[in-house]
Image (cartoon, rainbow, N blue to C red; front, top):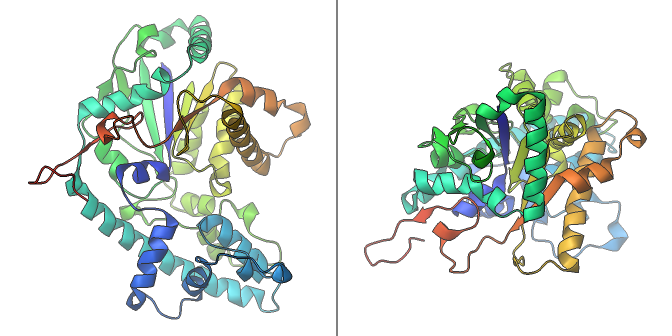
Length: 388
């Protein structure tokens, strides 16, 4: 069986029109002060998110340096700043309680926004199926040939692999938009992949993995792993487990972390869409790279948002951006990796088997149903105008 894993990030929800950036959430907090009180974490966010300049004379002051646009990154920096205080443990404990309130408010905000957005969207099997072929159809022919050769090598080892395929989804978002998008699909024909299989029907696994929780599963805000908690903080195990996204996921005792890591490890092709590659999700990026290391016939395809991208532009900026993305993946791997990295030629592995594609969020006609990746339809109102 050929296995494909899709790792989905916030870029997908944004693509559908959901205002799900942290900055959107902060705007909502600012307009609804009655929903919280005496929450210093929210106060810090609102006091700093709109800062335009950095006072270089306050380089040691975390408050003067942050804008909170990357919540997990800034939360970690905030805790590092707190760890130097004489009352560090007391302040950190209070901050963790404030973090829980922020998580619940984020759930309320996203639930309301999704409920408002859904009447404007129409998902159907034809468009959803089309999106699962898009990453392969947009690969350069040389890259398609490389993947074909790798899969054929896999078939040579075990010819039974050639009789079927499956697609699994790992959704780092809290919303249900991905679930609604694929709910009408049981099997799908994926161009290029189906062409080299003995079957045209690739099975869709409707059981989506949510590493960070979902609306009915306590959405989880925090930093990556226990090792990311700054030295100098003496926290209880409960506080550690709530603060660390990995630890919190494991405390749910449903095996999701291991199932996700196994899904990535056993996949022949790993595709990311709209994933920021932030350090808070480094555990799963590490497993992606580890899979490339351990399985010489595996391939990763990263689809990244770039508003300036044009298919006809393959110049210096294009090459530089790909290098930056690969370096970010490498940093995530090294952040988690415990082995001697000098024994592994990471750069060469990523250069050969981590392919980068770009999506500018638009099509030539600017019509959402013709978007390159994950097409959908906007429902038109009575005046034949697209809903806002």
